[in-house]
Image 1: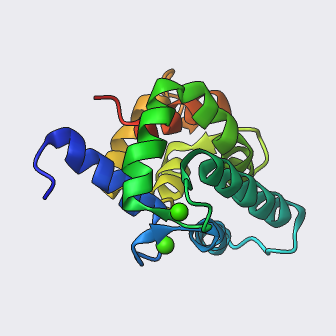
Image 2: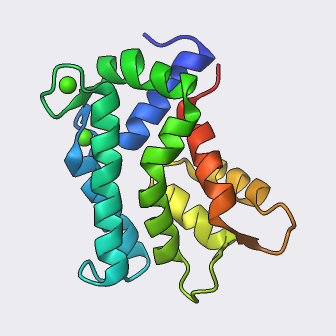
Length: 170
Ligand code: CA
Ligand code: CA
């Protein structure tokens, strides 16, 4: 049983990655996240943005598997996540930003529907929510990211914030 606040937060991050809730993280969870984002923003999988998102999802999965899939069965169990991924990512948040960046870059391109290089706070909440971040947290995070309060959020802010969220500081 998870009793500490830290343990509870780690469990929540695992659940965020385990999009289909079958008890382990695998490639399918990353593909599901990509698919859900494309559906949310009415973007075709075969478009350039769709292809970039799937490529980013694959790179994200490969990076996570490289860090956490200790027995190489192409699944990250809760134990592997808690014992491997969380500790190693916390020790090296830059590494997490690096493996997540192509996916986040592509996700923001999908959400940047007017192509001005930034995403509205409202659409940032939609992205975070689709990625499994709880809606009330997503809202707080998105508003905090809009540092100059112009209603828009750029990639430079999102990648480190996402890394901070997933690397779960103690
Ligand atoms: Ca899963
Ligand atoms: Ca495994």
